[in-house]
Image 1: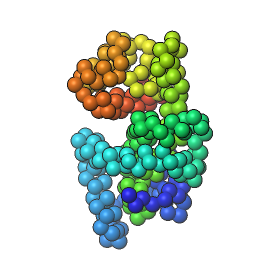
Image 2: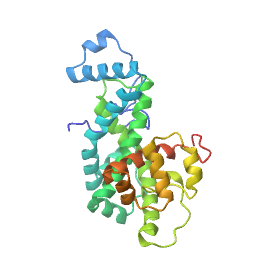
Image 3: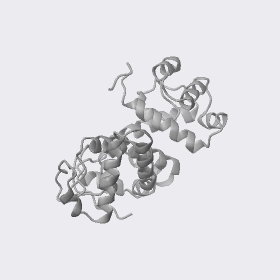
Image 4: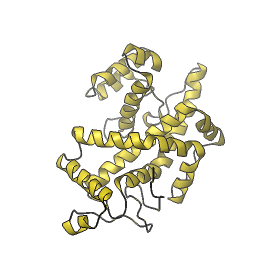
Length: 258
């Protein structure tokens, strides 16, 4: 993939080659002339996205392609432990993954996929803010390098929520009486809140597919049965629900940002 090694930064700043924060970037002709072809293409991409205010189909296509391209490497880093090393080097040591969970990630493809998806979604949210605020500097890092560094920076937080979801899943898989959900932001796939009627009301503005998933989950259907009922591949249904719950994690129980 050819990404640069991460070298510092914080939750909302791509790493700079010298370990500092990237300075705000403003498009200037003389600066663009000093960029190589790939970086200049990145600049033009950002300018095009800005014309659409970093939203709508233009943003969806861009970030979807970015996440798809990064999915494989991120899963590989999670599997072989390099993600933990990179997060530590960037000052974001991951302390919530027990040896048992690390072993699970080495051998369970679905577990790695879930965690990678969470990390990519978290990185996408930060990239959106950085680009919209004009804080990406093409002279320091490409869009791809900036994005993957943001994924690494967010990984410790994402891993904490994922680890909590695995503890909750043990009850679900064993068929035991489940405890109260720890919190919406730590819920596992197709598991969100006890009061699904209230949950449906809070997120009534979501698309028909998500609303159908909420209703079917409230009826007690299992994740694979929900996917079959809606005529969706399981992985596609899982991705739709995970994007929705990731969005919901950023809200408090009153529906406002947490």
